Image (cartoon, rainbow, N blue to C red):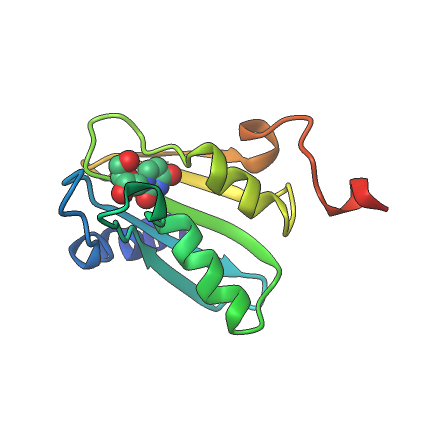
Length: 130
Ligand code: THU
């Protein structure tokens, strides 16, 4: 699958977002090493802190299906700027490898590619625990 196709899959998730509070939909598409793609959207909650981001939705779907190794993540929000994964999502993704390629897109469909290592340098991961 091309980068463009992965970004387009993330776009399809915007309509699934449950965002009555922020009105800011986010879509994600996470590619497993075997090529399977897991999609996600943000799911908000009246107890705001219980909100789940699109990237973590995709990640938890993948891990719960037995996939723990990933190559690329596309994420898009309804913003003029690229939609960068939040800190909590970066850390959750980091658990499964720092060399993930992140495609951060804006609402026009433009995107930039950056590694998770760049987004979360000097990170804490499972290797640290020994
Ligand atoms: N959001 C995501 O889904 N992913 C991110 O990485 C950043 C923030 C969501 C959470 C909330 O539903 C909305 O965007 C506004 O913060």
